[in-house]
Length: 177
Image 1: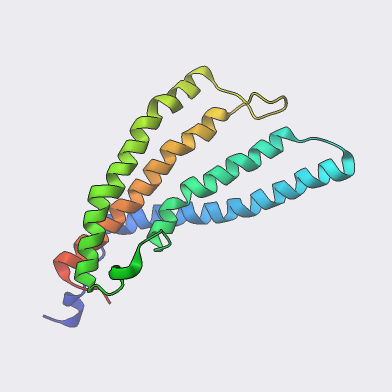
Image 2: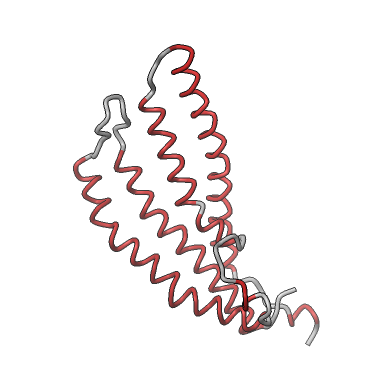
């Protein structure tokens, strides 16, 4: 067996899922800049012009929610999730792959399904009634904010499937260098 054959291939599905996760994460990074600039605009409008900007303030809240909810898959892809690393770092790559695969199958994917299931009717109802902000001058799109919960479950689920695919590749083909 040649050296090239001993490396586990990255399945096409994993590459595609990673591309989606990477694109979402990069959009969230840019959204962070937009959020900061919008916050500065809100402060300047209030301080120098005496104008309240409820819609802009709510937009910052929406962007903040999007960064955290949609950035979760990106954090997982880049290993930035919370992990109890006392034992994990000492494990062999194969044992880590088992831990990752089982953790994804037993905890992460069911959690994504659970979040989507409990949020589904909540989000659907918000869309059905065309939910708007209760604040004067607020955004007329509360249903979009609530939809982020479903997008969170979807984006984290896609990243989890990519992680599972990577773990399976290590288990089937061995350690990737």
